Length: 151
Image (cartoon, rainbow, N blue to C red; front, side, top):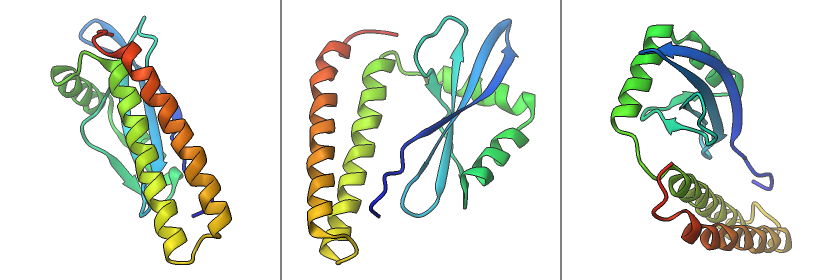
């Protein structure tokens, strides 16, 4: 409970889809129960993380998740990209900040539950809560600069 579970980004390579080169990256984190991976697709020239696949790849370990991602065939990756692209959001920067904020809300809740159940030292837990709150405020302040910007 005391350690954070940051999102680990693992580049998987590029795939050709409809005359485009698409970068595929696996984002993996622990959700408190299991490791969950989500594929992100970015066309060449995109500087952000790209667009997320709508489904997740669960596993008991980060290696399990990575193995599941690497087991996907080229055509399966292309289909997932096409689906994500058809449903893509226009405001990637704002969406990314929102996802980071939600991850911090979930983490803050896990820390608070750990404190209330006695699994986490109150002083250490309070420090984590304060640190996470500051990080959340930084994200919130950044949101106004990303709002309305298509990327």
